[in-house]
Length: 212
Image 1 (cartoon, rainbow, N blue to C red):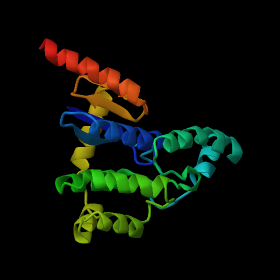
Image 2: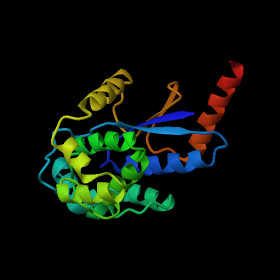
Image 3: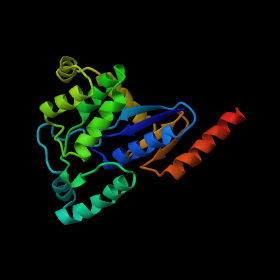
């Protein structure tokens, strides 16, 4: 089975949804290939400034920081329930364009899942500013990517075609929000769904396969 997950690295529901799906996939008795597809929620965000997420949400919607925390609290509870580390109130904003490109480098070297997990945890569990190149280099180095290759990507337009392809696919699928998961290029679900929903979809896929 193939699962394509359209997601952004600073999207808390993507972090939780990705964790749920990967853990669920490990419980299945068949081989599952999970592909990350880039989806930039805010492509025009700053690549230099790193604002606290609570502060940024409050400013964006004209609410108090306490109200922003209330809105963010539900996803923090979801993460805790799934055993995913999250300190969401410590997270800071980041432009994710170059991070998505680095994931394609990691994919070529068989390290996509490791880097994806590391980026998610850096942002949501450790409050690391992913706009800072020195922090990104620490993370990519820790998963085994050579610094010279990472810098070569960051200083070029490498993998821009891959991101453009993801944008085209997202447009064709009329994706409005993420996470958005496509199963065997046939069925799709949106949002961080519980295991019960995944099991139901899996049974549907099996029944379709048996019919064919």
